[in-house]
Length: 458
Image (cartoon, rainbow, N blue to C red; front, side):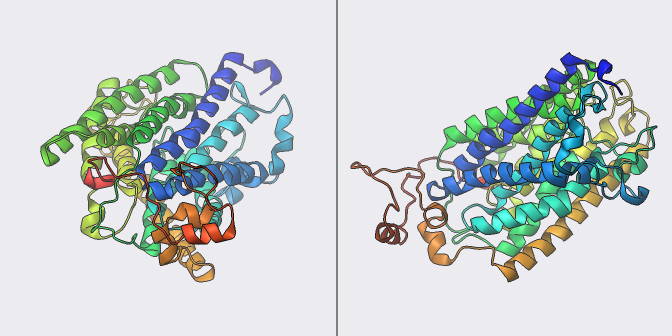
């Protein structure tokens, strides 16, 4: 590729999409997760998203891009060779192109993917994980899990001799924008982490309601908007593929909201605002891998199924006894699995992907590829994340102590409170003695007035 082949329209669209995907982490995910926690943990929850942006952003520049998109080491399709990409200085050359866009714009776009993939995990550990432990776990997870898996799924071989990842090029599973690399990956890691971390005090016995449903709905709306960068931006150009992905994203998400709310209405007798917000995210997760391979009608069918199944799946944590605080497993792991596997049934040969699923005469060929890709990512992420969590628990401890958890993780980990209701003013924790007193007093000061509890208690 040469500098003369630059398409400024494509470049502008990819850079705008990168900004939209960054918005999905901060503020969108931070608001969505922060509103779903109790008042005494809102800042900690939001800080997990902010710190993920900081640490993963640095790692991406140092070597993450190379590990993900470098030529596969030994041609095995397992990990990229970062040599030549350390610090990204070599990519500032105007002749460094990816298709019709500067490679640096592709670097920026994929950096946002790495950031949100990591931040998604944090919703599972609300109210009880040490902030320092989260920082160390998330950094290690990005290095040993996300970068390799993203290499498997997103790194394509080409006719220049570049060798990409094994799922994309040998299995040929379809994953347009990250159903496996982002959502199954993060959901499996969340499950492993909560199994080691343990349940919150009072889990299953005490109501743990979202303290700010308007923030949840605002965050969900921003996620919806940002997701057009996630999916349509993955076309890497302002073209028909981007338009198809955009429309499919609208169709699937709208249908998923309906699917979720119908389940709520039948099961609980009412449709909730938390259910609508969760349905939005479930639909977005489900269509992410399939945005280029199904028709708009197929997207509607996929969305209804994903929305309904995720609404049912969030209750599994009570039956199986794991405390996935904000339903990362029920929405991202289940939604990612369903969306990825449904491609094997719903893929339309008239779509940009040009692949036929079972319902379009393609037999089981694409279905087995989708299942292998999804299961491989699930097993790898779960096993490695479980090992990471167990080692870190032994070395530094993952969890705050019982008194700190009761007092509120915002005060004990950050010396701050999300809502200062003191009519006189002043700073909580401004003096050591004041913080010591406050830290022994429950600070869930915002009344739990919402009729819904988090997750399956909707």
